[in-house]
Image (cartoon, rainbow, N blue to C red; front, top):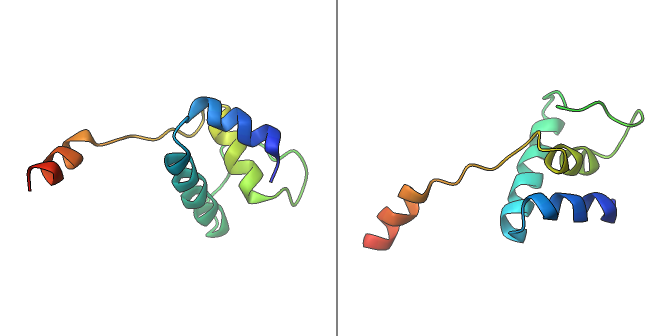
Length: 75
């Protein structure tokens, strides 16, 4: 994993737990055959680096459902 890419992705998604979840889900998708949203820099580029670059370039964003957390807080 490229630390420069990690820092760039953290600038877009400052919450580390959210970033970890985004990267892990995207890597699973790439491993399952989904196409990358960006062109890999070289053949065989690590899928973690691809996911981090997608996040750093703003191609992949997280949507947070605040209503779900409000329902859980009421219980």
